[in-house]
Length: 147
Image (cartoon, rainbow, N blue to C red):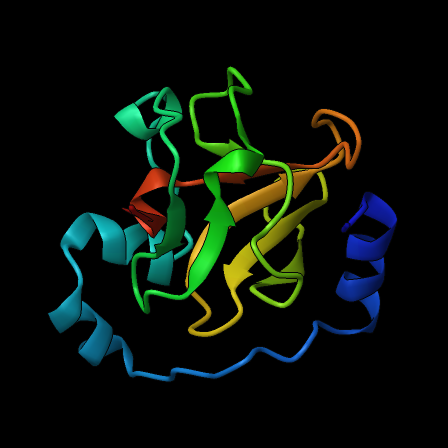
């Protein structure tokens, strides 16, 4: 199980190797993705809070990257954080997500991206429920739910 300490180590020492890599140009991504998904995933955008019904849906399923279809989260790790974005306590595999220091605001955060295609997903915080106490705060536009 990943913890805040293990994530901090990945940020400082480097991410785990992904199972595969997918690299496309910005123009190629622009052709494949809707404008909203492109903005969030390729330009590190953020959707408006509470703009997606995915925040309150807790049906069984797997969540994959909207860009490359890599499996990222299992619904058994999903919880209602009340923040307005889908939240999870753990990724489906430790190497599914990459972690980077984000100093873009007045405070430091940890950005999360798809480790396969570098799609911006959101951020992870150390204020989630036990036992991991992690909250992966994810833009719904960066995910697609699989049955």
